[in-house]
Image (cartoon, rainbow, N blue to C red):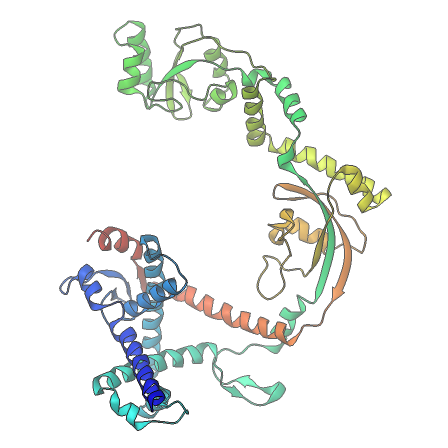
Length: 498
């Protein structure tokens, strides 16, 4: 008897939780605190109808749903989380409103029998039988609320099933089809599953471009040493050339000091608050100039001398030499660091060429001595790539490139050069160098296997097709002219400000 009462109590709590969730959503007190009964905040519109946060609305229910999901995942409900919650809830509310509108136009309405059948599981005893006593213990108002919820659920399911299909089947065995919704062509399934049947395995060696030798950096620095000389300048920058020329005259005639001109007029681009140029290598100064030839005009200034008006990338500038220049010394750490930074920023093609040549030398050696021997000779590690199919973008219908232990393959699934090389090779062929992100790689084909798709893979493909259909339908709906999404503006500028 005690167990029976516990069962009845737990069922009643379940029913009440369903009712409270659907009817009251995020809680009346919380909603009133932010919206007010007379001034409810709209987060947007669908087909001219405001989507507001108030008890019983699809929007409020969806907010509570996502809030519960976040909490169940152990995530903190801060302002950032709530911004995403309101975005997801808005999209769900739009879907619900669109579904209801479409179903209403079709003339469909859940019957009393349908609602009763759906309600029945809420009033079963622990043996799975209908219990009239349990039904009697639930108040009439709560039962009506439950009916309203179930009616909403049936409308949603009707639209979803009609559009995307349901568990209901028609026919038997190989001729069994979904009773409702879009049909998946068997030929389509066969074609998509076939994409993952041929898989190829490889060995790969990779040259990391971040390991560009210091000796090469120094060689470049010595060849271009003047780029790394340092200078001591202050500067004034204004938008108007005429104003800059006027300032040159005023400073030269002692009508205003350079320092006061900095304070009163300078936009302070490329300088600190006092006008001192902060990036003072020759190449950095040159990068700021509209005309490269003006560099000589600046670097030839004697101490305390002013330049003529120089056009920079941000306006018109006046340079003042405030100290002696310093010749670059490649053996000094600061100079070497500057050269490294310059090479990595401005000479990437030089780095690419260096490692491409190394990879080409590896290819020639591998063709003569074998892949493993050439790798040992070159001091690079050979990594094995488990078999994978041709799957551009690693879409879910087929296996992806197993790149967890091969950093060079992190972006390989969208690298056409790599995929063309990999899937046009014969066994033991060695590819030409392929650039993969920050690596230059060489691969050799080690195996080809053809696996007939399993039932699990066929099911995966069918599920993926259904997921794509639903995803694209949602995208099309949310991009409809009927949708006005003001979630960001409302949440940050109105909702949080209250």
